[in-house]
Length: 176
Length: 199
Image (cartoon, rainbow over all chains, first blue to last red; front, side):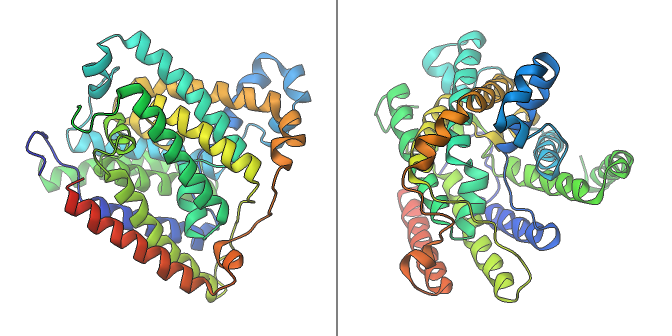
């Protein structure tokens, strides 16, 4: 397997299992379940408080999720630092504006990739807030607590994701 | 780089982080450390890459599913073991089908375009994937748009088919360990199938 791959990742079952243990440990010590998307609302509140404070004060959702450093904000900053350390230590760090798969299909333009990434980020976050969670909050934390919402959301994430990925890249199983 | 050098580097990093961490309280420190470990696990599994996330959505490489489903199996067992001992409180998100399904599908659409999810976009940036930066800005814009539309959504989609904070064991009327065993068996069988197909 993986003849064309330059470098394999470590065993995903082991690493995933460790991530599960980490989550349980976090719940036990701090009562916190993994999540990420609420922090983006806090970031939006932070920006709007600076730019349009009068408007921001009238938005119930931003008032409810006000800009502040909390456990989750530190958690996602930690993800950035942890990935940076690991990538640097294991020689994986590389500035790349256009992913390889994208490049093979749509060329090298960092502008078009950036625009689609921005649009995708906006749609994904709107959806995550409407669903009340993302792959961390619903996909991991929700499912491991056996929440019905976690399983429903996770299935919806993958179904819509697979359909749109097929629309973007076409259906061929052998296409790279 | 040999092990001694790595340890020296890690020590330097820890010392400098300690300076930052002392300024914030314990809960924030736990958040940072938990995130850092999670970031290392995600990076080592290569699941914070656009190519891996799209490969999963295109049914070419299920590394992400293997990672997530393994985390879920361990997480279910650990969480409910502690719950039975009275050591943890659950935090169940409500199942409001209008919001969960519509939002979940919208998330999927955006996810396929971006190729990162909110948590992994930060990790991708840490690996040097600068397209994740535009995704993060987009996500903040998406959150702002949601805040604008929240009053309207609250009276419409978020009122449709609200079943409250319900779990699968409650829904099925069985003990949680039966559900955990069932989900684990399904996941393990999926793993066998994935390995057999070389995905």
